[in-house]
Image 1: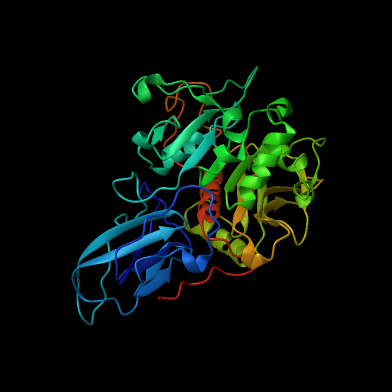
Image 2: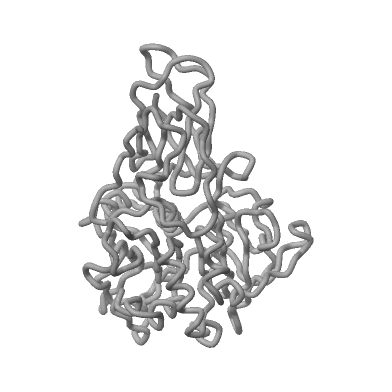
Length: 396
């Protein structure tokens, strides 16, 4: 059987998604930071398994034949079980484009529990909206939705979104982001925390106790996506977070558009380069044109962090995306958390300030938004060293 796996919207093919036929009921997926190894992520006693390639395509061999054959697609804690009407004996079964996708809501499958802080300089909440997640899944933390918005900071030319629109959650006001990152107990309820750039570090909102809580959250298996001035969690975080990169806040930002490079020396970096071409985000393999690039990182620390997107010109050189697994000092097979840092303002075409989702005015994904989605799903997936290709799960 063959097909293509897409994001919840059914538009964007995805790389490194597990596809399998189960032979038993699926176990529930627990919410919150958990230290799960790749070998422990699949339930349902898989019979046959495959991974999607850089075109989102997969091929399952030796699929059971008959009617109503179950099929599961999963990446990290994203999971959806579907039913194939029929699989014929001794012939290939193909599926139509857009049919096999990740869930848009809880009725369709499991969506990670995500906390997202708004910011005056980067409306990342709009990217999740364009990803295809149903609006009903965006709720306050007291609601039942899988995406909870918290109010970050903004100021001057950077107004911040602080509430939902009236047709969504009755216009509820967002809880302050400080209540989210203030304690590890608040953070650990979430599988993933996404931090939109606020336009300033606002160090007063991120005291030492909060920086320790964020550090501890990642060590427990939490996943963090931090944009631009949220580098404060790293630069001023507990050791060894400050040593993950060579920091530099004093050089001018590169002019837009910037032609950045994808580091293809690592297997998943090569996969990113190929995938960007396949989804129309790159015309030249290994290159991506970026708008709104910032410069706070000169380089990454070898052996600790992984550089994904960078530039050498104009000088000084800079890094636009890097990642590292946590706990940093643990052996690779004991690491279960992950942090992505970007120096790119991603959703520059949408607006900060209006009640959510009124500011989400664009429908199509830009090249850099597609790159971010690649990183978000990589952030979701089970942890493996970045210098190794993703392992194909072995049927139990």
